[in-house]
Length: 242
Image 1: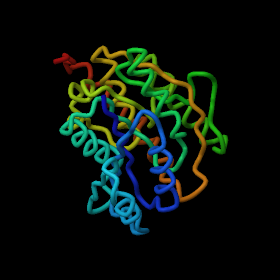
Image 2 (image 1 turned 135 degrees about the vertical axis):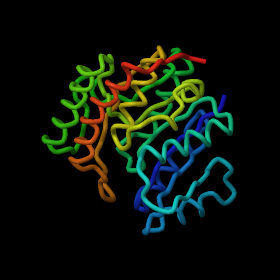
Image 3 (image 1 turned 45 degrees about the horizontal axis):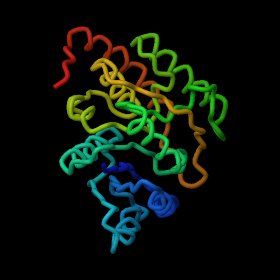
């Protein structure tokens, strides 16, 4: 049984060391894979220093900002090749509480989930320090996605998840068309279409205290239009498991 947490980064020097240290204190043990998009603030250098003498920390450096979806695809490919059993997505800015990784693990390992989602909306709206406009945009985006797709997932844009390796092997992330938050939606949609068991675990999402947010309204707009294209493609796509 092995775990790896994939963390895409761009300009996260204020957060990355503390985050890695917090994850490293957890039980069970989690390996950490940082995917850095050539951060100009030296994020990758901090990770390299932490890697010295610690075999649980790994780094992939990319030449520039190539997008959230492609970062996770690179991480998934690495995790599958190395044979990890449970593969996690997590933001670098402490908006996700590292301790909740254990709850995602238990949902998959103990409760039989194929995908566990750290959900902001499964038990009300559990978001701290977001402006109301952003909360409403995110919440109603998830309602829109559920209406279009039929998925019974409350937090369709969530970026805090655990997959069993088999799920990623069958999704074939390289075939995912969407980027940004559309990528998060399409990964859930594909797992759902394949018939995998998805469990949402309630979390409290806290907006970053340090660093700069990468979220823009354009990212959500791209995701919303992408949902329509995704739904249309699904009508002519077969979703067989291995």
